[in-house]
Length: 207
Length: 75
Length: 257
Image (cartoon, rainbow over all chains, first blue to last red):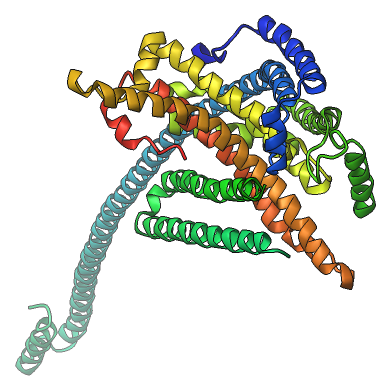
């Protein structure tokens, strides 16, 4: 676009000089020159004045340059600057957009990583808790078993002791009774038989 | 109104008839082309306008030249 | 109000009528320049108003965006018809476009207008065709440009035909001037005459029938500006296209009525 800015043609100063010359010449022709052909054209309904034509050529010679240099060139420049402005704005926006996209993907990636991390941690905690529960339960049941066992042992011991105590007591009682009986009628056969029988009876549960 | 005037009216009317037919044909074919190829509308419009201009010029030439020549014949 | 203005300007136009006996149309030299001055005044006011909006980052000013639209339209037309090198003709073409358009638009409201004057239109046509010759000579050289008139190469035996083609082409070149100017003149002046005739038709009933022709006249305003510039573009493209496609061109060349 920039290499073809100026339209080809005569240079501007020639146009600016030729234009008024043409205008003045046209006026002179319009006032002074009358030709038969023009008259007959006018009779035909075609009003042609060569002076006007000449003058108009002059006007246009000036007009081209004026409009081109005062209005078309600024418009072109304005359109060019506006376009480059818009382009730069667009490229800026595009840059920002790509930056935003980068940031977003980064953020998303980090978010995903954090999420995965958190999930992993939670899973680990859950697993740990489960293991803990298992060990605790094992320990508790072992303790309970031990307690039961100990209690059973104790009960057995107590029972043994009680039995021993009772046996002692019974033996003592028997001894006392025996003593009493002995002291009265030791020789009595029948009594001896009774004691034996009694002792047999007492001793049965210990077997 | 004399005979010349009547002849003038008929002649210009005939010219208008012919030019009207020509314009109609151009519009007809241009519309058909545009309907068949909507993507070529821009080019067709340009060519159509040029054709319209040439047809129209025939009528203008008639209008401006016939009265003068009639006057010349009558003279 | 505008009716009053129109009557006043009609009086002005009739007062300035050339040589007193010139019939109903055609203003004098001074009359033409009064109307041309008016046209250029309107044009430059619009352009100046458009220029004030150039500094904006985005063209929000109405006239500026209109001017930009016109510029882009004409540039598109030049590039489409003339080819990629046609952009440099845009200022030339757009000047014609603007002057003809504004002048035609002024003619909608005024009794006369520059484009309703054959002398004015012939001047524009002469500039247009003269510029085409200038460009043709600039692109092809003097000899090349005139060789273009002689048509395709036909060999020695066909020299009379080549000569005939040469003469016909020269005549057609001259007729282009007449056709360009007469078309514009006929359309604008014909519109004025049609409005006058229809107004006369409605005079007994006090109805300005000619007023109802306004839509057609508005259409004419744009179309005539377009056609003048379009044909100028076509003529320029015919003489400057040669480097690439010399052979296809003569087949496509429209007959110059």
